[in-house]
Length: 75
Image (cartoon, rainbow, N blue to C red; front, side, top):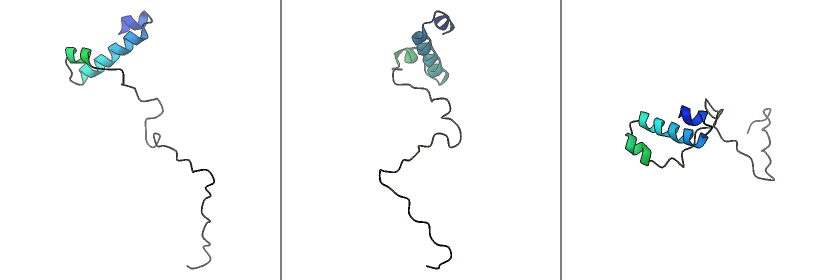
């Protein structure tokens, strides 16, 4: 992986990195070579941590928030 990165062959370095990751998780070398790594994507930086991966809900067009209740009245 280091040799590929030094040679600026980043696609090969990525493939080696993903194979190493699979082998660390228990795959054999032949299983790691045959694995389809095209769909593997790493989590984006900043999307990790508490509450940072929540989706923001956008209201539909024309939506208005409901009126706040009057606390001085009952019912």
